Image (tube, rainbow, N blue to C red):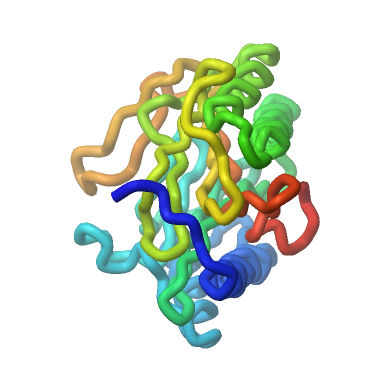
Length: 254
């Protein structure tokens, strides 16, 4: 397929969809509390997205039946919403992709359920910083591999591992486009970044081993192989003439 350089009109459409995806995550914040079922959070997410004239990209994607991915504790990604009730001290990731007027916006963030442990808080903080450092490598004529290099360097410095079995991806006109965005890579490797590229950076950082296992029951939920915690943040990134714009960073968290 090759990497699609978006037109100004397409970028504006992707920007609007990205804003809605971010607003959905913000809307969910007061509902992420002890006792909340992940299935109920998914329902609220879908209602919000549809009420704003969009549809959830995950629903029906390769047979997936839900409007979001919700991944608590040792779930790395693609957590299937179900009857699990959030517990005090949990950390949980919610991943939303919207399709608005045919354009895609993709983002995820970590939530704390009540008060979390210092152990969990450090993982969340380092993961957020990994994303920020990866984004800082985004500029015209830089190599895409620098993103993964920056992420892995920071994660390893703090004793964490980087999931390599899943990656970021081009996004905007389709759910998944070229290029693949590795979160662990050699500095100076990969394609040259050019203005008009849009893609996700979504590092998954584990407290234990890097590998994952997919639940046989649902065929989607990916967990750490050792049961230790995992955290993830994600933004949709636009390469501009001078650097980058995080299209889903609507609230200035980064």
